[in-house]
Length: 286
Ligand code: PMP
Image: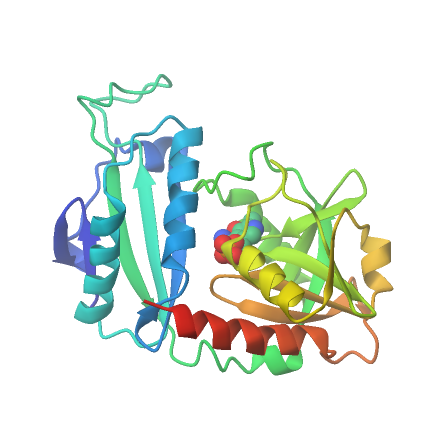
């Protein structure tokens, strides 16, 4: 059984409780982060802590926990649960007022709810799926307009994942005004020659922590990076495609809407970026 963290306490998972009036539960009024663990160490903790603070600021939520304490809780959960490879999920909601009301509660009277738990995933780095590559389908992006805030309102991404499953694919890339925004839980890229193309940052997509690191490593490795919109048609004709996220790192995409990219196997760029990302991130893991 896992030991989890709820509002200052470490508890067995079956004893951890949150109120039915919690605004995370009633209104999806909360934000989250997922930090991966490799070799028992946290990958890019700093990046996740900075983005968490940004999400809280954008929603006018006071951060209830300092960065130092947050790091301590992450490390303690890794230790208590013996995690070598996996993830730490963190969620902060606007707390549980006495009753359901659309207006935000007085933060003096209603403290935020802070929950963290571990997800044990042995073999995360050596995921065989990375050798095979994944298949994606395209779907309309009908999410709200502030996708840069990492909120817990994940119903449409969940539906997108189910649409992909039903179509025999692994994930869905979302399309808005003809252009790919991102995957249901990852950033999307195409490769043409030695050039990596990905949508530029805006309110339309989540500012991936893995994206920032991978683009930096790509530039350091003399690869060309172009941050611009691309259509799904351009993607289907690309040499390669891939996704990035904290839990999948870099994952090649070998099929889009039933169309194979190249010979239908991962190309050179995505596997190389995965290797560089894993090596470099591990060096800096804390
Ligand atoms: N876009 C979306 C919609 C996501 O949910 C995620 C992962 N949570 C990402 C991109 C990738 O972000 P990161 O690299 O920080 O995990």
